Length: 95
Image (cartoon, rainbow, N blue to C red):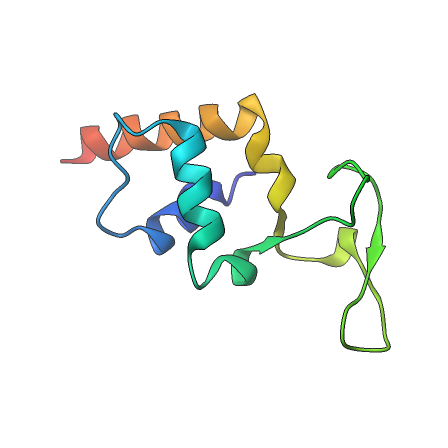
């Protein structure tokens, strides 16, 4: 989760307006062409914090704990919204 502010800055260098609700920000992330670079989708029915193993086109499966991407479902947590609000506040003070 500590990488989220950096990822948001990379995906939205023009800044995401403070007034935009978190649900809208998450929707913009999901629609972003580079979403899959930074976020992974957990298999249906599994909690994002579980130790799930996944693989798609390749025959070798990758364990999520070794994965560098953030589980996309974690964006639906209050912690993610708090991280976003803190990063917006920090960026505002940097101006």
